[in-house]
Image (cartoon, rainbow over all chains, first blue to last red; front, side, top):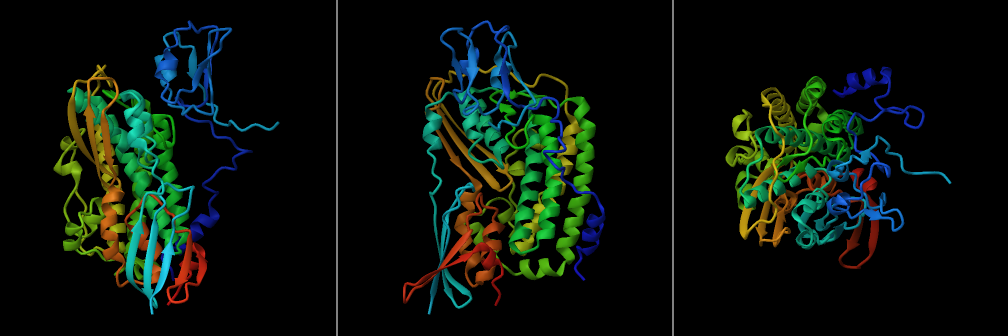
Amino acid sequence: MPRILPQVLRNLLRKPATVKYPQVRVEPPKGYRGRPVVDPERCISCWLCIRTCPARAITISKETKKPSIWLGRCIFCGECAEVCPARAITMTKEFEFTTLR
Amino acid sequence: MTFIVPIGPQHPALKEPAFFRFEVKGEEIADVDIRFGYVHRGIEEALQRRDYKHDVYLIERICGICNVVHTTTYCQAIEQLAGVEPPERAKYIRVIILELERIHSHLLWLGIAAHQIGFNTLFMLAWRDRERVMDLREIISGNRVTSATNTIGGVRRDVKPEHVPTILRGLDELEHSTKYYIDLFNSDRTILARCTNVGILTKDDARKFCAVGPLARASGVDTDIRRDHPYAIYDKLSFNVITEREGDVWAKSMVRLREILEAIHIVRQAVKEMPIGPIRIKVNLEIPRNEAIERTEAPRGELFYYALSNGTDSPERVHVRTPTCANFASIKRMFLGGTVAEIPIVIWSIDPCFACNDRVALVDSHTGKTFNLSLKELRKWRH
């Protein structure tokens, strides 16, 4: 008899180790590095985030002089949120970037 | 009559495609030829064009599975160049994440190894337990895989006191399941039949071909950078260097499984003894001309970095030698005399950063006729 059989039988009666994702959502822990969000009200246009971004994902809008983050290049390291003196950039817990049109 | 069995090189989803050309006499492997370089990304050149701080995030992307050990080695090399010492607490946090990474890497290895010998139940169980480590890493660093925790002069995130009970609880569960896997590897007939006396690397060969990490330790070579050349705070922690004598796939699995237990032991000590203090110091990154080497023990073996600065804020040269590169020299000796059915598990037994043997083409060297075998069919290959 294979040695793993008792474990297999026990797992048969247990509930699954995974969660049924789209129906059941697990909240990411505190401090999760999700989508970075810029608050244009708080931004003081110091542009430190542009210099610190390792992926060069932050660009400046010509009219408003405020930064915007290009998520296609963003590597979610959180350096911009750390360096911002006005705390205008925050890392949210959002991780689902795919959208249905 | 010899057949040529080319394995590889394509599997773009995986990190390191390589090409293996086996010459087989019936079932027996007579010769093997390896080709690399399919995923050359020019990272070393790219490192010279960015500044030191941006390089940390590029270094992190050399290897997804062992990203923390890469950034730790890089940051230690740059700290050595700049002549600064990170704070004590930062070193403890580095060790905690490094060892959690070792646990997750070895469990990942165990899962794929079980899959390679056709033991999918163990594959699922190992990966279920790996999720626990990933959750711990998510709590500490904010992401499951890419930690982005290390920086030059310390770490960016603190391990908060409220996380400690969660970490310890997770480690207890992991210890329990790892002991079960060790028991399984000692007694299960399928595992013993597929792993013992397969892909043997003797102690002399391991020395001769400069094997590193678990591969060398499974052949009885007592080497571990954490003990021989301590970095971070490994000199203050007590742990054993695991060695086995046999040198076959079973010994390599056993070394890795027992290393998980050692890693759990190290994390427990580090969490308990962690001093209170700053986690990061400011470093002036306009480093005058200087050079440094740094060695660390990655989950796969010795990782080596060389860095050269030139007075500006970007490095003149950074050279990386990964453990897989060092281990490939000994792979030929492990294959010779083996059978075709052993190929997947022996390739995987050195824990290479790839799993590219998805497609096998058998070429009759006399007629030049090629026919393809999928990895699934290769796994079912029997004598």
